[in-house]
Image (cartoon, rainbow, N blue to C red; front, top):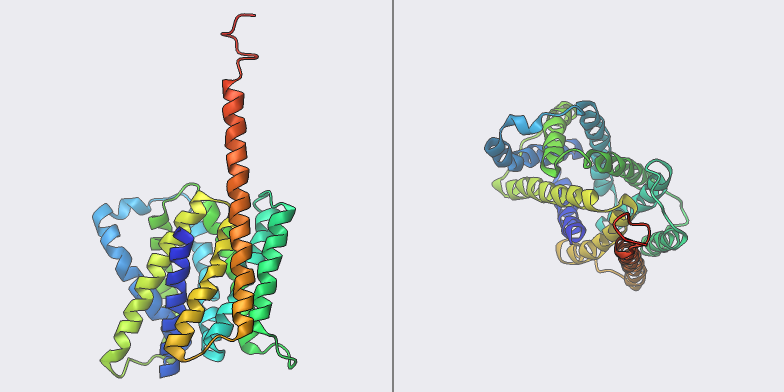
Length: 299
């Protein structure tokens, strides 16, 4: 449920980025306002709990996470300005494939054949939605792929941080560090919103991004990365609905076929994991109830 909430928030965030880009705001300036208002929405928590809640021995890892997130965000927002909304979102779904690979190699998570198969099936669904043109991959597609790969790396770092740090601290550190970073690159392209109608989208980016990241970080702290990212495929459904109503982009038949494959793979992975954990719990209960070998049991 946390990932579903995060997916809805991230789809909404992407839509607001697209709107501001269509209005003429440079992607780097959009990135600054997203982080600025993201920090704004974390300030109440910070003021209530005090700066002491940010005390950590892992500041270097927070900095690394923020630096990679910064580059990923810039590339992702830029790709949204260069491609149709649904297509840009579809390209971002290569991240779970990268994340599953990294989870197996770096975090040593046990990724079994069935989960690999379901993840690949989900990726095939993305390709069906994407319908790659014969002309090849353009700049927007390359930017989206790079952003997705970096996003997968961020998931690994966040998973590591969530073992010792609170989700609120992780999100707060992100916006605290990203706001000045994004301001530096935004200044050469700076422009103020010409009308008040732009501000709801700018503020909405901060709200959607902050709520989405809070849900995402909490989910990563509760389950394996390769499992959590499999649910993110449902973001495509949110994107299809938003694209239809906000940008008049009616999803074609291939979109719904691909979406069915994507969501089906996520549901399959979830059911397999639930059964696996239930079996493990049942074995643990059986072992704890077995008196054999107990020093308190008379022979």
